[in-house]
Amino acid sequence: MGVSGSGKSVVAAAVAALLPGADYIDADDLHPQANVAKMAAGFPLDDEDRWPWLAEVGEVLAAGPGRVMACSALKRVYRDRIRAAAPDTWFLMLDPPRGLLATRLGNRVEHFMPVSLLTSQLDTLERLEPDEAGLVDDARAEPPAIARAAVEAHRSWMRN
Image 1 (cartoon, rainbow, N blue to C red):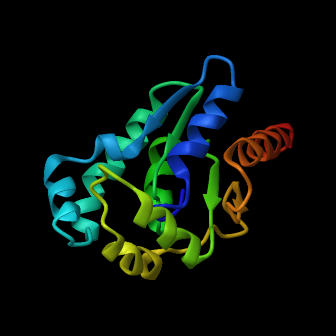
Image 2 (cartoon, rainbow, N blue to C red):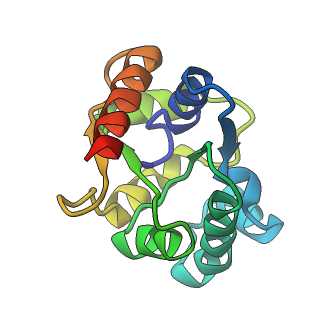
């Protein structure tokens, strides 16, 4: 989880590659076309835009084990909605500094999320809380290293 440009897709794919039989899913692919068009036009989504999408995210996660998903999940209430459908969801929050985010977004091609929406995403972001299952990473390391740390932290969480 994290804002656009935090590395969610790359790290989630790296995590899935470390887990035999895991499926990588990008929650962006589950957005209805109206949401994609709104963001592409430079308008941030509101909660009413997000609720049906978050329901779909939860359903997809609940449909089977071994699913690794890149999803913004910016607010606690969004993560709660996902956990309502998929209670064992464990979150890796990627939380790089703003300058790194802006650089990454500026270097993107062919992505619907414009750099202009970074501020609205950061304003919306509610960081992972201590009672939420997961790990916070500053996302400055290379994705394979972040993925290995996440897999180990998840395994430790599963043992407890």
